[in-house]
Amino acid sequence: MNNSQELTPIVRRPLHEEAADRLRDLIVQGRLVAGIRLNERLLTLQLGVSRTPLREAFKVLATEGLVELLPNRGAIVSQMDPVRLAETLAVMGALEALAGEFACMNATEAQINEIRALHYEMLAHHARGDLAGYFKFNQAIHLKIVKYSGNAVLFNAYRQMNGNVRRARYMANLSQERWDAAVREHGAILAALSARDVKRIKGLLSDHLAHKLSSVLADLKTLSTRQAA
Image (cartoon, rainbow, N blue to C red; front, side, top):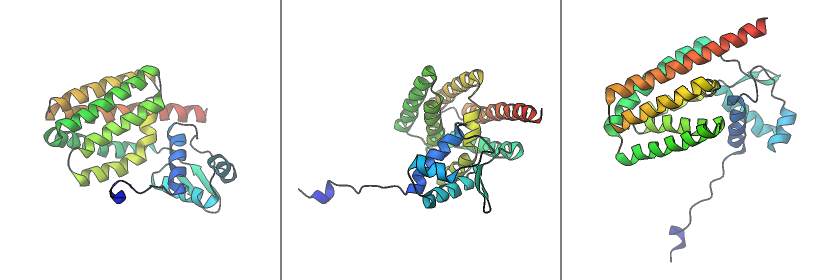
């Protein structure tokens, strides 16, 4: 037996990537709120890393708009800019609509079935009221649709932009009414993809992000009013 054909390399991710993943989840889920200072001493203890990978993690999150680096003062969780958010989601809505069109034409039946399986996993988390678990599969579905468009340029552009609005997409589901509506929209998106209905899926994907934007902007306005009072 040729052992070289049986073994695969052990993949070890850099510590700063692991730290960035943990912090990203905390910020996206609202457990680290906007404006809070990120305490390096406390986080190194909690994450079990030194300050060097922690600071590298801050830099990664800064490129995603989740963290603001302050010269000689560490880092804070950034505020969401309503104008930038609206502009970004408008572009992403157009990208998702285009990806849906291409996916209807290019995705294989096996790939559509893969998206369907993710959809059912997402529904199970929704039924349990597990928003964090739901969001994981929700994001996987959107990325798969874009990936299976077959356009690498579109996929890379979308993935980069999605990192900048992940917190807003999570926040949009904090309302049970909006969360339930999002689940229904996903069911319609899957049905349109399965039927390879280009016109319908383009409209559904574009509207889906528009609804999220409307929900988040309303929440940000309410939060701003409370803070000003």
